Each structure stands twice: as structure tokens, then as C-alpha cells.
Amino acid sequence: MTDYHIPVLLTQSVDALNIVEDGIYVDVTYGAGSHSRKILNKLGTNGKLIAFDQDQDSIENLTKDERLIFVDANFRYLENYLDYLELPMVDGILADLGVSSHQLDEASRGFSYRFDADLDMRMNQEIEMSAADILNNYSEVALIEIFSKYGEVRNAKTLAKRILLERKKNINWTSSYLNQVLSAIRIGNENKYFAQVYQALRIEVNEEMKVLEELLVAGKKRLKVGGRFSVISYHSIEDRIVKNFFKTGSVDAKIEKDDYGNIYRPFKIINKQVITADEKELKDNSRAKSGKLRIAEKK
Ligand SMILES: C[S@@+](CC[C@H](N)C(=O)[O-])C[C@H]1O[C@@H](n2cnc3c(N)ncnc32)[C@H](O)[C@@H]1O
Image (cartoon, rainbow, N blue to C red; front, top):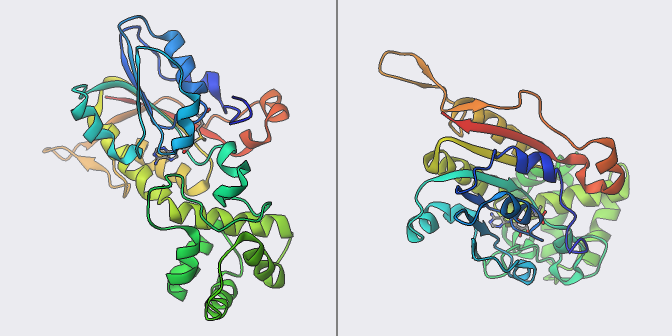
């Protein structure tokens, strides 16, 4: 399963949950299942683990274990499924955000500039909008926004204009075609530029920032007092969303106040400094480089 995905910050993120043997935990990003298996190892016979993954391919990695309930859906539906399973409150939620190595390395999924494929990039292959749809339909302003915000593409305006010109030719957006366009206008290192553009499209296709906010809001409602959030993010915007949410309990970082005007903080922050991979992990897994772990406990 390491071919599918090598786990990042495995021990630190699972230890962060302070697992109690008969507790109920949620791993909202199952992937190859490494974090889930580590949680199961710490659970007793009466414990439960609910695992989400919206990518059907992750089902091939399922571990046979009666304590595991797998949900092949977007984690934005966390509350619906907890209600359905009659397990309304949980002891911990782990999220290891973003894409798996499998998604990046499977040419046909269209996530990577390294292979020729249709520009798909949907983690859940049942949703409607692909990256090609974004290139064909988004306005110039919307394209500029996603390239600059999610990819930090320095010449986002030039890129957006160029895409509008290209789409008049009624082309089929494959990665090779997009790469040719990008090569002609890139600034700086080619691979880095491609990676920034592809990342921006992927985040937009899968609404990654929006679903993260929804998950945090749902988790705040569904974590028991003393229950923990353990979140690994790989993008500076994601990390900022998590950090501000843990600090304030709200997605717009608005401080809550009680009836007497006292500041109310729904979470105790467990690690003031973000946790990152140590040298050994970085040597074994380059993907761990951008991983940032934040832990918070529900008050
Ligand atoms: C970084 S990988 C997780 C890897 C896993 N922790 C492991 O070590 O094997 C992220 C996984 O979460 C899934 N995922 C990402 N966003 C999701 C969402 N909003 N809902 C459900 N699954 C999601 C992806 O399909 C992918 O398999």
C-alpha cells in the first residue's frame, strides 16, 4: 500500500487524538488507510472508527475490521453520516488533507503535468465539474482569482487571457495541450510553474477550501468535550483556515463572546507551534515536506 500513498506525520497525528479504547473516531481521509490502521491498533474491541474517502479507488485498501465503518463520500457530509449511523458525538477527528500519491501518479486521473491525459482532477469521479470544464467556462476574473489565490501564479492575468484565447479554438483540454500553453508564457522554473497551475485547478475542482471549512464547523458541533481534532494540511491557505478556526471557533476568524462580553474560545490549542516532519521522514518521503499538523481539543 506504500505504492498507493506513504503516510505523513503518522505517529504524531494519531497520538494527537489521545485515543481512549472504547472511543469513536473519524478518519475523514482514508486513502491507503495507514492512519486508520494505527487508530484501530489503539482502539479496544468496543471502539469504532468511521472512515471517509470520496475516491472509489481507496476502497481497494480497506482493512477488514468489524470496528471500521467506511463511507465513500465527501467528508463535507460528516454530520449526515453521523446521524445516519446513530453515532452523533465523537472522540476525535483526523484529517490528512489534499490528494494521495495514487491520485497524482495515476496518469488517467489527469492530476499531473507529468502524463498526457484529459484534464480531469476530480477526486470523486461522480462530481460534474472537471478541470477542463473550469478552463472552458470560468470567466477571466474567476480564472485570475483561482490561479493567484490557490497557485500563487505570478502572471495569473496573462495566463487567464491566454486560456480565453485558446478556448475559442474549441480544443480538448489535455495535460499536453495545457503544458504547451504554459511553456509559452511561464515565468521561472517550468516544473514549479506547471505544479502551481495544476494545484490551483485541483483545489478549485474539488472545492478543497470550502469543504475544509464545512468539516471544521461540523467537527466543532460533533466533537465531545475533550475530543480532539488532528489536521494535516499541505497548503498555506488550508493551514491558515485551520489555525484561525482553532483559535476562534469560526471560519471567518470572528471571536465569539458570551452574554457578558467575555471572549469564548471553543478549543484549547494543543500545539502552539505547527508540527512538521523530522529529517528522517523528509529523507524517506519528499511529500512530507509541506505537511503541517495542528491539534486542538474541544472545551
Ligand atoms: C493525503 S491522502 C490521505 C492519505 C491517508 N491518510 C494515508 O496515509 O493513506 C487524502 C485522501 O483523502 C481523500 N479526500 C480528500 N478530500 C476529501 C473529501 N473532501 N472528502 C472525502 N475524501 C477526501 C482523497 O481522495 C485521498 O484519498
